[in-house]
Image 1 (cartoon, rainbow, N blue to C red):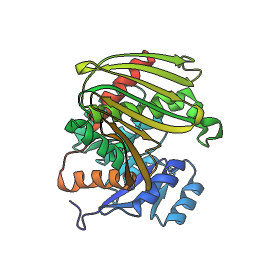
Image 2 (cartoon, rainbow, N blue to C red; image 1 turned 60 degrees about the vertical axis):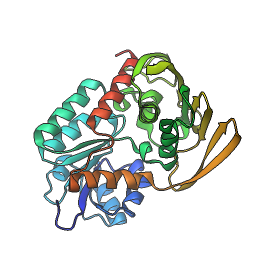
Image 3 (spheres, rainbow, N blue to C red; image 1 turned 90 degrees about the horizontal axis):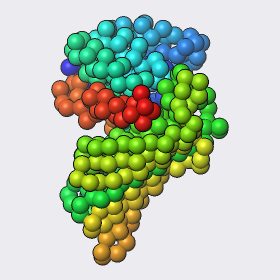
Image 4 (cartoon, one colour; image 1 turned 135 degrees about the horizontal axis):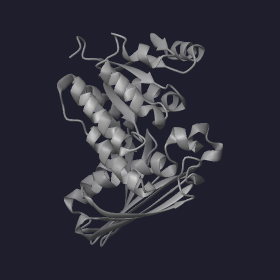
Length: 324
């Protein structure tokens, strides 16, 4: 436990995601402070640090993770670098919050879990959507039986990457996958979180097939969970930006659309025998919640909602979809 109950974080790979999501989230945290960052270019690192009043900056990851004033790191580098950066952080006894997709394949995730366990540090997979208010409300309704026995679940998540600034998303070596890895990892995790049922079978159509030369652009997934729950998922890098989830039970149906934006009003449409009801929920900043959740786990030895094992389960599904 730190003297002032604050965890000092360093962000590895301070790119667009850190600018848009992580740095604003730190402005509202209770137990967390952004104290350091690394970027590939030292001038960029210095400029960013000055912009956000961050005292520690470097172009060398090892310098960041070995700094005595850094207690934990957020690995926000491209997925192909996650294993290297997590293992380096663990070597220097830093707790690690790693963004999804957590690795290139399940074997790497197991290495991360083992390394952090050996070092005595905590490892959290960054499935931030579990901290969305509308998701938690939906999970409560599903688990409480308000929808009756769940028969079907579906989800879609797409965007047009041709207008997206992260060019490495289309590089199969750096990204380790297309929309299945980048977008699908979120929805696969949310269905696991809401349904709380093991996957029985999974089949996929991935177009074009992911390879070391090119990523897939679209994927359609057919799934079955225990208790005969069926589901379908669609992920794409070539459609208008949209996200959605449906949970269909014997007594009702929940529909969520564009539910993943922080600090916005989100609507859950609940269809039941009594008619159609719209539940409006203001979504607090899920990134703030995720970071402080990890800090509380470190400070007070609380359970982590998405430990490394959650990332391993997720990566194993991704590997099955890609046929690895």
